[in-house]
Image 1 (cartoon, rainbow, N blue to C red):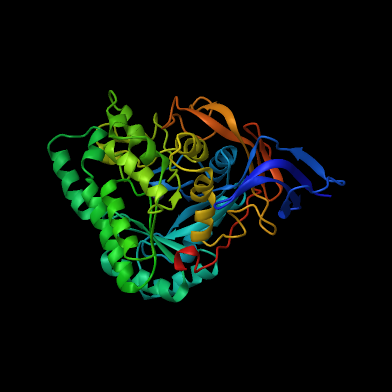
Image 2 (cartoon, rainbow, N blue to C red):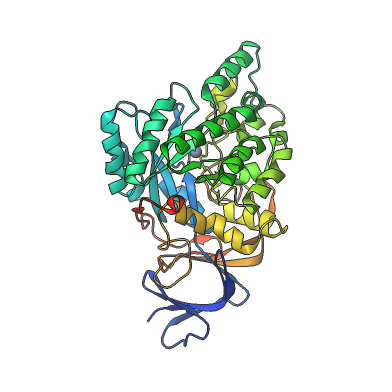
Length: 462
Ligand SMILES: [Zn+2]
């Protein structure tokens, strides 16, 4: 006896049509019209869309940053994700300088294993790379950590030099991992920041004003050039500006395997949202910063034209009252990050599909199928098909929802999208065949999420 979801419209990256979906245990068995109900449990999904569970490829749960820790741990963060229709995340383990990557992996497994409510993979953030680090990378790939993130920003904290980046890129040609790049010229930004502080510019808005789009574009250009020399693909995380997007487009036009993601905040918010009274702008202090409004339409175009392939959240919440406040007198001391893991599908569906900027197929592709392919989870995740995990969102395209910190499930005392009204929301969410969310309530067990061993040489390599 299985579970039969009947009469929903199954949406995939390329196709869409009414079908029944038969789930047997944790896996999808059949997807076609007219599956007989037999002795199965039956869920009627007439009028609903059936989406493959969302995959958020960029989250920071329980992450130490600048003397604070992101306010969602693996329990609260993944529960909020599930309620919003996301059934898998890829979070970041951080190698501490001078230590082995294995230690970081163990630390993050421990953070996640008894708490995660949905399945989770891990990227590894590389902060230094001695000779042994190259072997560490291979070992991580064997452990299913098929991607590494390096920083061209945050000097003296996370930033690595070009030689380190290039050696890491070269190593991926052997082990098939994917390098993810935080692309901003950290050295230049650091000079501008110190000059601003010396001039007494300490308010949150100066976080944005000291990080020009050219500093992002320059780093994107340099990162892609190094990947080209090494002969490997590259993935730019949280791309935020037209300047930077132009670099990716130029590379892709030349046939290079350059990939990039953006986030809802860059598609829907601008630097104008930071022009709030007092310290309120700190709610929007994250990196890269919010940009001038003209960039928003360009990023939507990038999604449409496939110069951007993924929308993730870069979820990294810090509470306004006691954490963001660390930077009251100095914007450089504001913990960088914002909450978003719960609202990604709602925002993309409403502002993307609802306005005709992207199709339903493209919506599914950028929130699920494409991250699954690029990060070595496809076809186990990212598609509703026989043999795939039964990660299914029963999506009500007409459901109205008001986004607010008063009702959201993220452990954060504000919302970046406070007061946004959206049409379209998850009604039920299944994770490996288990009903974990119904009408905005989490029904699953805490700690039920499983570690995802991801395959190397994912979609970026083809
Ligand atoms: Zn991030």
